[in-house]
Length: 165
Image (cartoon, rainbow, N blue to C red):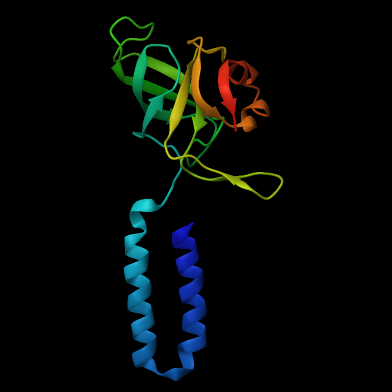
């Protein structure tokens, strides 16, 4: 968002200052490049291959790594199903380290627009592990879950969640 704002503001600045000379225009462009480079670490993207996600249910896994995003060329967003490999797990959980599992993305750092014009985005990428039929493996879901999951037919996850955002 900030990178988008910086690019819009500097573009306007260039067009306003374009007729005042090359020296002033070069100063504006170098300031734009410095601002753009500082925001590179904050660019949010799709959940794609090798993205590490936090598991927010009590299935036994702590972190998973995305192997493949199902249904999508670029990657997964809120409510999409992914195939993942368990990287960290609790000792006595249902899911063990190294197991290949399915998961539904319940929190994504990339913003998603809503019908009313607002946008929803989270600080982290999180997933709830599900079986092949789409039923959750765990019995509890921790943290907020967006109501966009209802449109994607993940009502069971919404019913397990403590807070719906």
